[in-house]
Length: 116
Image (tube, rainbow, N blue to C red; front, side, top):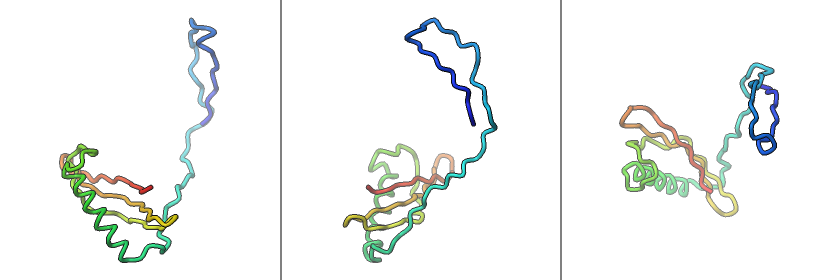
């Protein structure tokens, strides 16, 4: 989508009146951008994956029980969706999507997290 620019300086002309809206030059179209999906690279052993998964499940359960206040909604932890584990610079990095159930609307809520 192209927009015809309208340049003016409010400092130079404080009493300016805009008499024309920006003109669209093209029809908006869908972007072809595809974000890179992280993948496990096999650098984390299965025992560590199990321990980290148990920790994350406990953490997100507690987060929903208002033991930790950031969410502030009536969400019920459902599951971890496709967690990805990697060792980067001797640290374990995790990409995970957490599936919640909103108890007020009975809707499914997905939140994505990445450990730094």
